[in-house]
Image (cartoon, rainbow, N blue to C red):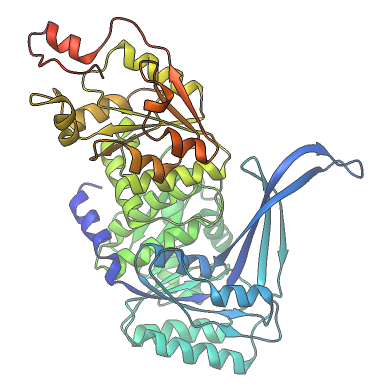
Length: 495
């Protein structure tokens, strides 16, 4: 995508978006634990349960993603009169925007619950509890009354169809017609094989398998995929289709325009659960913000690339999406340089995967073998290494005028190019204590020219069970000596 400024502007307008989500609401339960043996009763692993994490799933996950992105999300769906239903009715996004529940309680159904059992970052088993039945006429009428109220000032309606029965023929057709009458754009994430049921929507978002099932075609290449999409669009009266293709990325087909393909970014895939929901939420936000279909598709693909690298039903904040967009534009090592908030989100995901976090800090003005040795020792002591980098102002205060020799951007990019470094986080304070408190590393690393008591943050790290590592120094190397030899030095400390 060439116009990065337009994409960033669209993200900034997410807070003004008003989106209604109608569909199959469910509760996603993640049960985390450890496996150390195989059962004597059957050839299956024994999971020693550690903790549980309940989150909204299905249409609820779309609404949750919208709220975290900053939009106003109004959620309409069915829950049972049970514990899971009560949990969904009371759910509030953690520190995030506006999720307004308009859930209808149907006493004749159970709330759909998907329970996933996870160990070492891998799902072992999923157990589903559900009643796949269409609602009664009275419940349908209640859903549509709430939809009419929610559509009054909405920008986009998302139809999140998980084929659990909520979107009966009557509810689906009425929802599309009422949204169009209210001049509200409609996105449908389909599960039906008869895609003409979604006729009239502005954007249809099937995955490749769903489009293949609907058309009876194999869709082996880009040309076949586009041909199938255009056939469905013509038959169903759909303006545009975005086909998600797993590791191949996404394809956008619009009436009267050439198809566009965006490949997925190469990254570690921990969990694909909910990636489609995140894509739909981003599509809705961009469309509500007045963006083009191409801008919506591109940002949705970037967001999906983030969440598949996270464990569990995940969401993406505007800051993290904007950071990923900058990284996609810059590519490579620059992706390691991030704000402290984005760094904290990444650290939280590393912790969920059981990874050990290390931290060191400094000015790193002219990178030399002593720095490289320290960073290598630090990385060996942890699974992921964060480098706190003094910004230009704090270097000047610490080292005097004439420093830094290289500005913050240059220093950060050089550090990010090292394989031992997983994050570079600039900070403006004279010490990294606030950053350490935020990221809570397990290992705090400084050179052996410090004592443990002199290391900023040692007491805090040890208070939550971490430790301080004093790395051996590579003799004869310091930034100040290098500058002095070049005839530009002002004296002062070494690092």
